[in-house]
Image 1 (cartoon, rainbow, N blue to C red):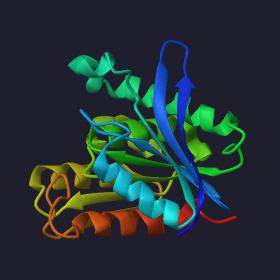
Image 2 (cartoon, rainbow, N blue to C red):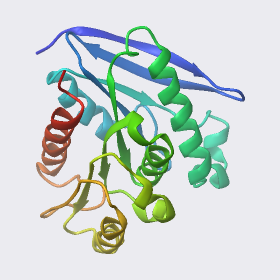
Image 3 (tube, one colour):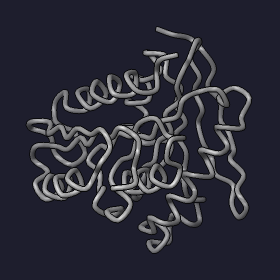
Image 4 (tube, rainbow, N blue to C red):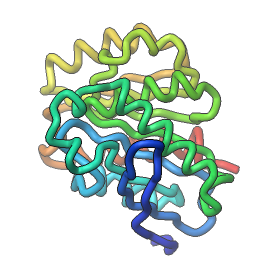
Length: 215
């Protein structure tokens, strides 16, 4: 088990202050920024589980609320992919300037609608983002941006999540970067069945180590 630091952080933007949890293992070479789905945030148990698995392999993580608490009650903001992507870009710029993470390669882990925000932000930031992983994501909500994504992208979908499988297949076809679509057998949208979330963490860990976890 790697040791390191974990702290609560605040990301100041032009209009709001975003709350986050930053964990930095020793000898880290990459940092993964989590973009949560609608109704979720930095305390999401599923994303925290994945983050811990990444930390054990030396990857830093930033779990952040892309909306302030009062904004999370506004469904127009919750499903505003443009807004979420812009907030993700703000958090990325913060990581690039923060002393403990400024030298680290950056990746995105997006869940549900957060995956669309991650891909849109990755398209806008181009080479600045080294890898993207989507868990049960809605990449179709960022369809027009997908051909501009340069980062290697892994789409993970549950085998029982039938409507989302089809949406991810369409999105996969639109991506022009290095890409992979993995369907996890027996998993629903939230990957609550058996060890399916462990499989998500394994897939994400290997993808990020390959593309942002090396010196």
